[in-house]
Picture 1: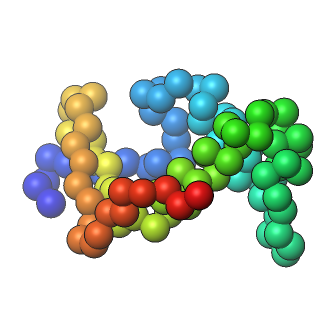
Picture 2: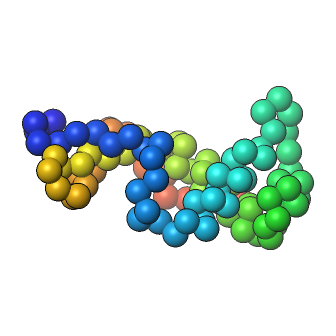
Amino acid sequence: MPPELEELDLDQPTGSVRRGQVELILDILENVPIDDVGNVDRIAAAVGARWSTTRKYLELVALIQAAPRVIVYRVKGTGKKMYRREPGTVRREITT
């Protein structure tokens, strides 16, 4: 890694994605049961979202979790960001 790059803390919001989508995805993740299984109907009702939207975001999260990790860097002294991913295969289909 070049010395002018620093890895970003992804726990801090960057403002580059519509906030409503991020909040909804986080609400969905918080309502997925830990010690049990839940269906899309129950999770959608808990977050106040449509069934189709909830299912789409759950499938997207599963697809992203299976992908190689993307690392975000900030160029020191600037607001610029750079990205790289770890080796591995990126799946392109969402299973339905």
